[in-house]
Length: 214
Image (cartoon, rainbow, N blue to C red; front, side):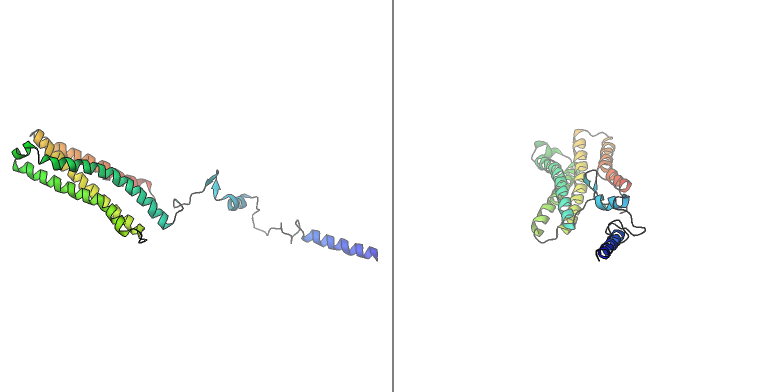
């Protein structure tokens, strides 16, 4: 009787060993074609999110929600506007004082027309660059920041174009007052081309050269 029980126990142990951790039915059993946990595929699943102790970057850039992306873009835009506003405010303030100088009465008609054009362009540039601040204040709390960023970007770009025209017009006026030589238009054209290259051509080239279609 005892031998039978021992035999049954041994059979059970044998069956358990066959289907146990090392057997075909145990927890450690893997099906044919399934990679081991310690293999390359298993390590990719376990450690795929970290490479060298850092969070892996998704193929499309940062991991961020549309709201987070709008917040980041708005912060970057504000820094850009601060730089542009400083330049346009200094230039516009200088232009407003010119009309009160004694020499302004002696300016010929063409130079006065250039001055008036320059002041109008400077005022328009100032309005466009301050516009994003007013835009953000009016729509704040309405949960439309992604749209606000788009329109603020358009206003900023418009302000940069107007600022370029203001600087070119102001340079033309100053050089005409300083000298009436025939090289003034050529010099102003060269400076205008340099502005276009630095402000628009080079960034546009870099955008098409170093960005993908994703």
